[in-house]
Length: 239
Image 1 (cartoon, helix red, strand yellow):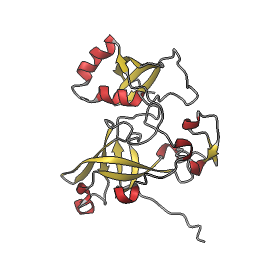
Image 2 (cartoon, helix red, strand yellow; image 1 turned 30 degrees about the horizontal axis):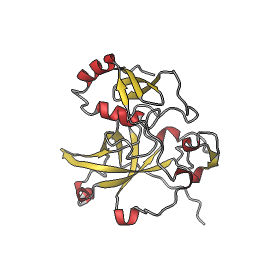
Image 3 (cartoon, helix red, strand yellow; image 1 turned 90 degrees about the vertical axis):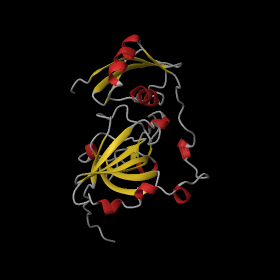
Image 4 (cartoon, helix red, strand yellow; image 1 turned 30 degrees about the vertical axis):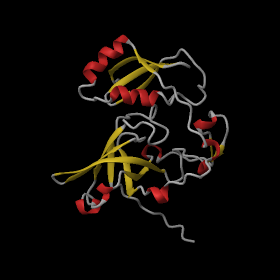
């Protein structure tokens, strides 16, 4: 068995609303309003490489967890779905701390554009940090990729969601101007908060205000058992 190392070159980089890890959807497809744009890098920016892809509604993205490249992986991890209390094997999880730092996501394909010498793919339902390196793209093929009778262990059911999000008077006023540039931001905030992005051990109501970075803004919010309450949406503070 060969133990040679393999070198992987990114074929592009994705721009997303998520400037930090906290608040990113734990799975792709959960937040349909989360839109990203992939700029294809040279020498892969040949429009012929994408011929026929426009006929597919969804694609697979293979990417690198680039912030973890220099961090050690562990054979056991604590998945959020188990409350962060129970350990399972890394290969039985979707942990970002993996031996080769690779991940996969299914996203919707909105548009393929050629702008001068640049190729851009607009995708939706993303769960990727801004500037994540993309290492491969493949079409999603329903008859082969969808397995309705598959068993999913500890993740056999969707996580509970909070379907109601309320905005303070201040946040509503701030949305008026922000929505001119980001018309779907209120919907996106609701989709993100409905999944309760707090740390896994925070499984009960608390009074703390949390902050997540979205586009160029800091979204401050509180979570309770009945609804999410957005306190404010202000210009992001550099961290």
